[in-house]
Image (cartoon, rainbow, N blue to C red; front, side, top):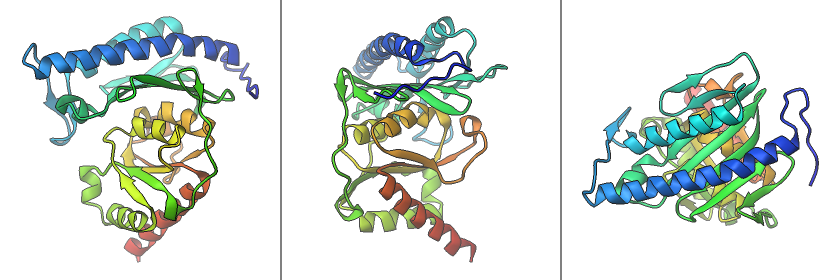
Length: 286
């Protein structure tokens, strides 16, 4: 493993790996607690505490807020100098460079309906770089993690990507939001990439798509309008697995950007997908 040191930020590899060990256990415990909570609520034993945000498919539950609350307590104790960004209304900037970027339950619609699966996602971003990512995947009941310079892992298994596939043989993933359904550019990208690829899948939880890429069950993922909590942990996981993650709109501050056109996966496939997206935008502007 290559050593990547960041002494100027106080996050050397040893500290990052210690944090990883602690967060793997917390992510697993919180994910299992949330799964059990959902089972009880769906069976009538308790209230899901559900409401909608921007659309009928954009949901929030008691479990979303509670997992986020519990995570903040733990993370604040582990790294007092870090700020926070989280899906459920969490934005606590600090004067330093470190920010915890968390999605307490990615795939809440799946979570509510009992459709597999959902994720708990924890990312540490320092000076704009994703250094540590921990994702609990409820389908695998496993934690995926990565520390920059130390590889991508599923529990204790080092994840190694096979030889890359051409787009014609690639299994690709996306999640098509209500906003994308109204966008001619997004529709054109979906149609063209689906035409070129061997197959398209939708998981309903983009954090899980990053795990699927890292464990070589898919080759490319893209989605429009994502937020930093969707991608922070997955960014280092994808890159340490041998892939790349690119934001097509190149925001100056991706942690607080209003929406991210995200392409992740095999580098050559990401470049091909980006070219399709750029062409679709040019056609619309012509």
